[in-house]
Length: 242
Image (cartoon, rainbow, N blue to C red; front, side, top):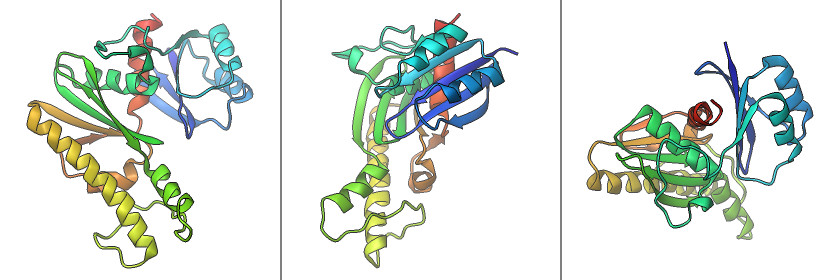
């Protein structure tokens, strides 16, 4: 079976998804942006195709290596996409947001979809039933909120995230976690409710590494998939690497 590598270089982590045909078989966290680990993965899986979504300044040698060993595509606003981008400056849309929009169109076609990515930032990505990515919103993510409370105050500690938080905090730790976790959940619930009032046949798709902390606090109907970005990348690769 043909193998496709889907690479996602975010602000916090660099990850790689291995697809055999259209099934995600493995997810690998890359240690750094050197080429040695990529070379080992190429030798092990022998992929036919590869695609990269990057929002950072990564080592360009990775792209040279992928282009040499595979049919390679770098995701950008000029890629062939299963949706349109009728916004003022489509070239400024993050590659990660393009991949999430592609996944929404692939799995929930002809429906209004709000894809919420829980990464370094929270991204709200709206793709309407006409398959047009019209924008959304960006706000600080979980780690950014926790770190900012510690950095911009004299006495508040840096707390580790936890999903199990009370409605009413009873000490410094729970006050911080309740404020951050429940604050994010209420933000997401508020956005989702506002969209649902405006659009019928509407879905909320939740993805990203912080799902484990937020999913149980989200009230609206959601489809949670922590690896949604890889599935979107695979769909785009199939079109651009044919």
